[in-house]
Length: 485
Image (cartoon, rainbow, N blue to C red; front, side, top):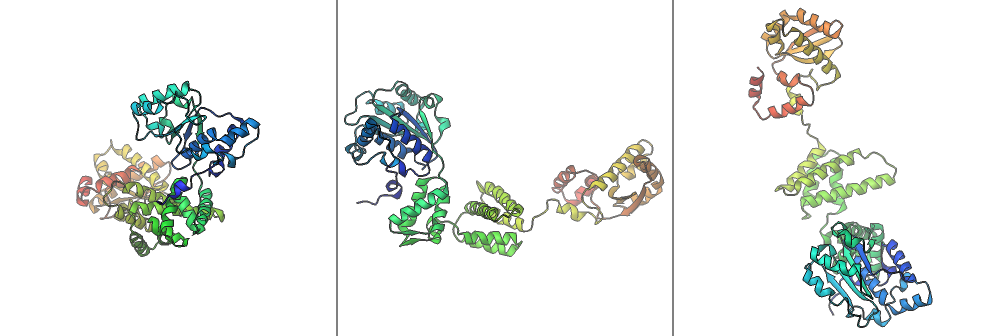
């Protein structure tokens, strides 16, 4: 006999086996016990959360003999009794001519649906209720949806519909309004992991807890995905499944390698980062997969820190933000490995965007601050005041750069000694105008600096100053000086 996959063997046999959807199993148990079942259900949720399995359980329960006996006697039912899986109706459900399962993803046309529903008006051959399970109903064409709509609106007796979809927004409101909607939630990892360990014991294999948690987290809320991953590991395992076996079988990078990269980045060790990233690439994973694994690992570390009562996450948040940006850049790029490497290198020793500006300025010219802005305001007020009085002074001031303003002393720097000497002859006039503008006595200090950056940069406030510098970098330095002089 051929091997049966775990996700088919692990399908729930009763409502009590429906893992992670207790809100649905409880509601359906009450509805079945009281006989208040609808003729149409719309089951909504992401892949692998139990939509089709629940539809099958409901269809079985509608025809289960023991369920009907309990309903007739008024006896309340338990989840483990729905359905019984012992009566003839339950045992013959899969081969019943009154149960129809239809995949709308591959049969979208109105002809396909019409052919399926052509028997809806005929009485069931064996069962009490004729059931139609239509998976991925949102894939049906507009005409096919309309053909279903009439049947759901005015259903024949003894007919029930179960429509499953992963995209509720694509299902027309006319269908939604005529169905009872069951919303399936993502199954949390802390629910998936224990179930996997229980299932592994039934298979006579020991699944270690850390391995089960890794599979559960990888499944992203889908029980079917979790069972598929476990099945893959089970096929390669001997008598136990370790975390290393999960990483090796599923092609994942180990937490140790991820921690090695994170430790190298946080310790600001560029050489260690290079070694750790090279070691990670040897695992055979793509750069974007490594980046996503790093983000997930950093997230886990932050939650561990929260549990310990720690509150400083600034460094980890910085790394996560950089990796997120790098991951988005990698898609469609021809050099994803280099993008990841350079991102991690910059995290070790961040490159300041305006370093080139700072190195080109003299030591006494820091980046703009409140004092320097105040000095520049005085300078420009004086320029405006004297611009109409003396063309010579205006010409000289156009070559001046405000490089400092401390106390009542304003420092003006010139690239050329000639312009500094020309200004010195007009110093008194400038100081008088500056004192008038500042409403206090202002003295001026003159500095000659041959490495002075162009005044168009230094006299400009942020952020325009930095933006213009970025544009000037396109030109050669001499060209920028020519533009200024």
